[in-house]
Image 1 (tube, rainbow, N blue to C red):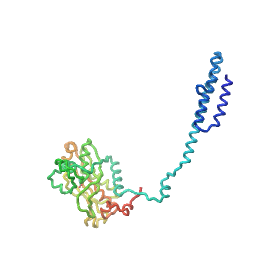
Image 2: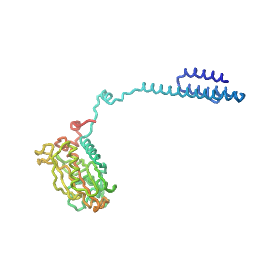
Image 3: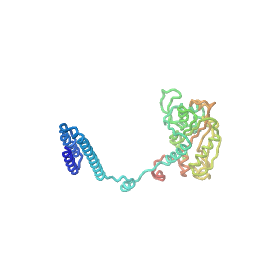
Image 4: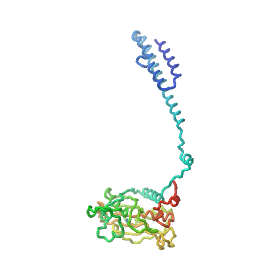
Length: 353
Ligand code: PHE
């Protein structure tokens, strides 16, 4: 019997060496190892053997079965690998970016300068432990005004010419508008967190006003807020200076003036020297040599309350960076309307991807 087993093993090895596709190998497997396969047939006569013979045949039969299984597994993986390699060779695509694009002579796009600056500022604030938040463009009167300490009859509402929606049915406070500033995210952000926290919120804002070299109807701001215990004006000034230094990669001349915003007390206007004319006076800075860039201040207690925060325990600062002005200062652009123009001659001057 051992002889027969060895013979069967030898003929198996011979047969398998000629095979090249998976189904043939699987067939061969069942020819030898299947229930009615050659090996099983040989082992059927085991029942007539003496116990001593069985002891001798058993291990040999097992070894041969295992060897056959190993050889089959090896063969199958060889075939699989070969098939994959053949497929790869057939379907070869040149995925190298430059070669395929250059070949078709395509130009690739770039990021808008405002996006470039926004990403840069986000990175600066992320590295100082700030979160980046988002908020809706269509807002309620409540988040745009009331929650920010600007009640219906407050004269400060005139400071922001507003695009209102015609939803006559909604009650006072719930009327809808296009947000006039990103300060809407102050109260939204406070409501969903517990102090201490710090976040920024960049986004588009809308004002119904006449456009000129330094005013647009649609522009971008970047709101910032930090709330905690014992936060001071000194903290505010430190963060603002640090940010401007990182953006301009140099010390720019700044000045701080008192500024009035109902949602901060005290409030400031942080101006920087006009980088378009280097302080000499031009259409961007309205001939004064300075540009209002960073209104800011200590958060008013009423605003903290609207955000669900106890003003006796916590305080904080907030600022609203004008992103378009910043782009103009950084790149020396003399008219804000270029930013929104969609003119490729303008857009393509900035960094490509
Ligand atoms: N929201 C104000 C504006 O749009 C700017 C501002 C933000 C002022 C935060 C103070 C604090 O003019």
